[in-house]
Image 1 (cartoon, rainbow, N blue to C red):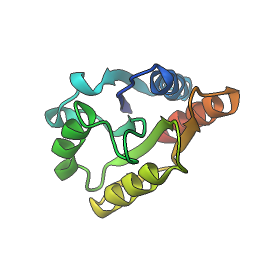
Image 2 (image 1 turned 180 degrees about the vertical axis):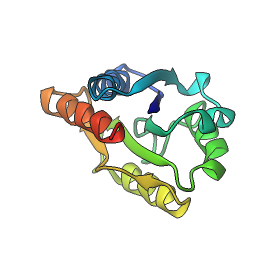
Image 3 (image 1 turned 90 degrees about the vertical axis):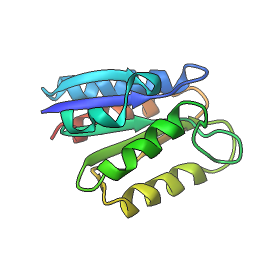
Image 4 (image 1 turned 30 degrees about the vertical axis):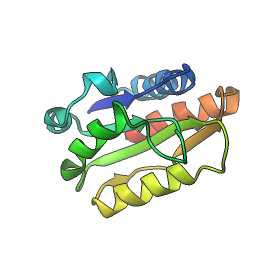
Length: 140
């Protein structure tokens, strides 16, 4: 199984989460690629059996608008039937951006394989363990 871990990180929090997801994927025996939003395009969707997308909450509970959201919007037509998992950090609020993002993915026909992982600011040990479990779930 080949899995992409695609993320955007401004402060390093979501990057730390992405590395834990990657660790979970590889520990479960799957092949994995760690890619920033700038390195991933919609054309690559078909190359992967599953994808973990990671993006922090920005502004008014939204995805990062410069790199991540345009890349994700381009990928949306290819989400139907695709196994996904979502993760990201936030600085305030209650995770509304993640619930909205999950709803969008479901509406696009994506298969969310596990609960999304969110954490406030820097991921603690529990959040990193949850990210690793997310990667393992994606690799099954």
